[in-house]
Image 1: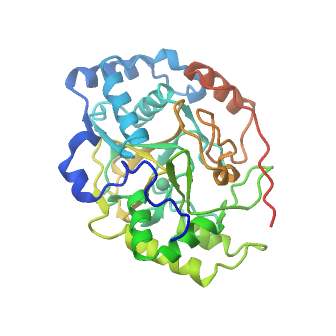
Image 2: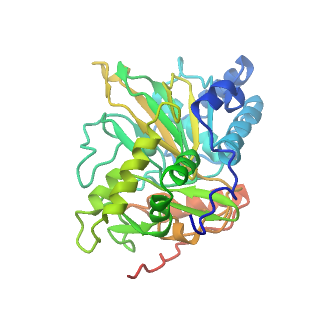
Image 3: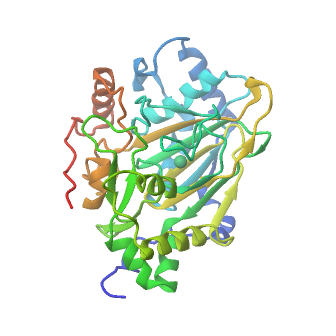
Length: 373
Ligand SMILES: [Fe+2]
């Protein structure tokens, strides 16, 4: 292989299943004191019909839960790429109170990012019958099995309120390990993944200043760190958009091999999230997917998770090639997310206030870099 940096980067997130099974440093548990504190905090703060933007970070003192939550975030962000925190209160609090709890954790961690066409800053991961494979499809609102993918932000948190009746298993693979495997087995295809552009559809959720697609390599490097981006569904739907180049045979080959590598038993970590679990992933080094699932009949029992996309204050410099999607590649900035079509002054005010609280530069609305052929 020519100039590809296959070893000269931070390989700590390059784990295999065996490593995670033998090393509990990515698992965190809230003790009873911390659980009670969070329950009391939410019960005393929650107000029905109060919009989430109305809650300020200084209303939420995480108390004894602060340290384990901060440690879990740090583990996912700067070490193994993954953390699982168990013990969020969930039994005697409503789904809206549980959602506020995830929001409160986010307010103490970074600046939440919008997640879709409705510019929503927190998503309920629940099956509402969405067709994941449609040109406008999204996985979080369907019960489909999902392709391995990254979410469009630095950190994603997923807080489980209710499990499915059957299925809905979470799968995580390290993109660092996948890259290393690819370089060993097919260095020629690794070059294709690193040096060529892949086009991703915005699934018709683009903001006014965004096109229907963007392009970038699957893997890139910056400041001695590795970054991955993958989403077969979005690359597939981009192929249906006028002006998007047809994938080359080599690109098809590398995407097929990549998905095969990601699902190898020694590489793919399988887990069921239990009620009260908070899964935290660094999207730049982890890829995730999920099996399909069957829900319970009663609405109150159906699978429900609360999802946050976060820009933390201690984020690292991104490769320039990430700018087409993230807008800002500077470290510690408010970046990423799907701005969507309902982005307004309320959103910007929230982002400015929260950035100030976190000591981050004031966000503005930078124009996207032009992508020309
Ligand atoms: Fe996702």
